[in-house]
Length: 188
Image 1: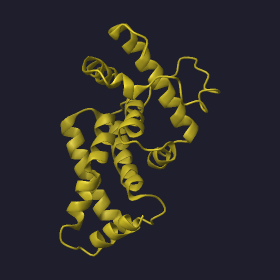
Image 2: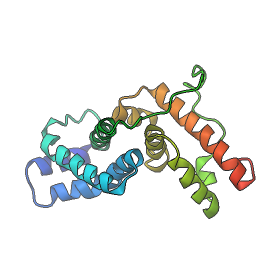
Image 3: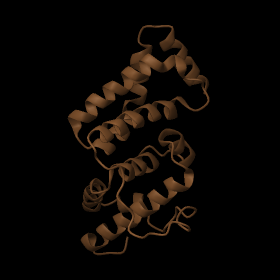
Image 4: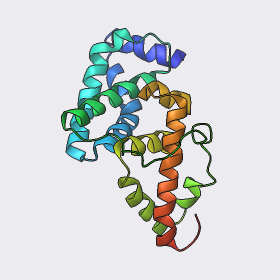
């Protein structure tokens, strides 16, 4: 947290190179969130620029109540969300009579996403399967598995309840499993 404070103080004091350092530090996170939601590289690049412009304009509002990573992720998420809303792109698929009661507390489903990525062919199929998910599920999987963020950190970024995030992760992994098992010929 003191590194966050030092970096924010340097940016707010207009120290040479401070904002560029902030961008370098968090551009990967910003790209992961936005690209997974919008899936168009040109739009994602523009929205990432918008995110860092917003961060620069509003950094004085950052109150150190959460990690800077979470705060910047929240800005990126809200910008991508507004983009999808303007384009009337649904964030999630309508649930088909699913009962979420037990899913909300049971994020683990026995599916090891990282192990499924070990083989190059499986990884290629996994990337294709992830692309078929709706924007919110793609983003949550990315934050959880690629950015290795905790459920509470993801909740701060998205504004979703922990149980809702767990439910989406569970359903997304089930869907990935159903897509991958027939393609790779083994139980994932």
